[in-house]
Image 1 (cartoon, rainbow, N blue to C red):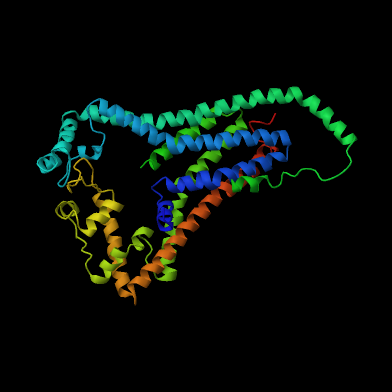
Image 2: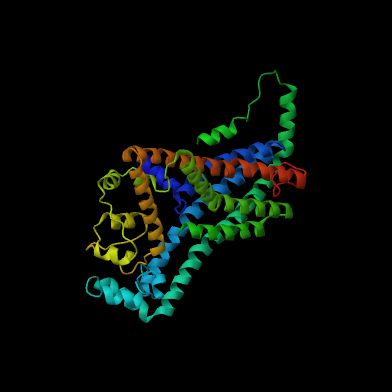
Length: 409
């Protein structure tokens, strides 16, 4: 993956890529290290227990959170096919309008996409059953990850801690006598340092479902907490994590793009991959970028090979079959296409008005890329450092201890 594609991916807040970067690459290792350091203020044993619990919790949850929904979607799609339905049929097509819908698409594509039309007819004749199957898909793809993350994982984690703590308590007298003996015969020298532990760790519309599972995860973590202080802390922490994962990055992106437009007099509302696309820039220079005014579905069907149709396919979710016919099973987001094409038109006009179109595009690409990287950095900092710090401060004020509430006696 090229650098531009990577920046584009992590800048798309409607995809899982920014979540993967923030969650697995930055947030988890930093939070684990901070948890160890914070609990070390209580005791080394407390720090080790907290480190183990947090590592299992963070990475176990990440695996289920990031992979559970796609896996369950695939399983549910397989089950839907076993009932004789095509899961590719978009449920939004059940609502008919002047430009698309089940009946409309069946009539329009009956000669050009006969196999896909059969799928539409099956749904049309069994609307209620298909809706129930899709509803079941939504429930299973969110409820099972919630059950795993919110209930089974913490319960298993706590059970492991309880088992290990019994062993620790059993050998504690022996360890204390050993430590006394070591101190008695100690000849000097530096003791092992654990200060570099954090540094050591630091070096080592699925998205919507993930937001739903996060809500269920919050409920599960509060429910399974071992005491009222752990319930309070989990509720606060999980709620703030949802905000910082799904809301704050969008606000930050809009703020940066708006500020950049005023400071640098440059339109940065398009995707970096598009800003770096030479054929797109050439079409602006040559005046060959033909943007339709309304009637988008009709345009897409009549001009499947046009540059605008290709852009809509890449950035607006429009899908075509191998024969070049638009997939009748898919719903076309006309409002989304209109918003995207208006941004393309606005950029094209502003680029033409500049002294040099290519120079303007390169400047926009640099500013947009910087905005995306800054957004990832800030949102990750808030998640990985600011939120744990605030949580530790509140914990100290409420409980009077630095130790994890669930581990403290």
